[in-house]
Length: 443
Image (cartoon, rainbow, N blue to C red):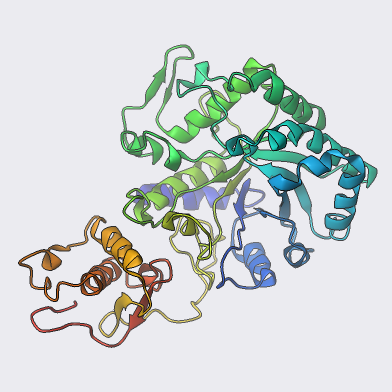
């Protein structure tokens, strides 16, 4: 693994201009720095040359003015039907684009997000008409440099197979994808996909394949290409499906890809080690420009997911932990995202001394969350929870809170004693009060 990141460092020195690496900037959190601070940080200290927003927040658009960073804005799925009307589309451009561009370098309007995944026929049937309408509105406003696209989840294929046999879903190939790709070809805009090997249905069996780790690979006998990672396979599958419809010349962009660092017992592969392996290798591959077996020497515009953890995001615990930077702008882990010669920013609050601090649950944490924290911490490699098993030195008092506190503190101590390793979805806190009790010492 060390060799991988030495190579990343070398590559980043060679590719000091546009890298093709962008980042998704989500804001479903209550602890993030102001957009102006984020914009300055991205411009001056990271290799990111573009950001993708999940809305068209005017405060964020103003913050990125005159930074040179490209910005993509997103239109919600619910707004798709109305935007098929050209009057509505022109009004949307006048309200959300004209006040900011070109001072803010808006590059893409992403119409909806993963509409096929929604299974909402109204959104699906109106997506391409809305994209055409917005393209027309942009041209009328004189913004020919802004392209229109839409990001798609990978439920767009018929079945999981080797890349050379991949095709778009029956029933959508001609009615949906053909006109969509025709639009992209005509307007010279990219077809955007969200490849997430983390969500592969057989991730348990193919974890090393997903993480770019040593594995047997998959041999495609029709192209005589060997695939050693799922990322390349997904991109070549996308290319093959597009080519089968006659649109192999349309550019492919990666709207989202990433790996979470934390989850609960239902997310055993959401770990720091796995996030470093996957994201580090993706960044290395994109920056190198080596391409894929079917598309060699090709750079794919890529937006990593995500810039920050989002502690207010609904859904499973794992949904909150996809970020690569802390709110104080220090890296959660290092995969070469800081510019050459830049050091990590000084944390706003220094990390506590390991000899005097402990990680315990907050007083108002529910039993459900305590159990989730206990299951997660004890399920991680290197975490020894035998002292809280029956007969163990810390089994008594046999309460959920006492056992969760022991497990959380052990996880905190093992994972670097940072504020992040005691977060537990906002339910952990660092204290100087030693929670040890007779016969049980919290190390």
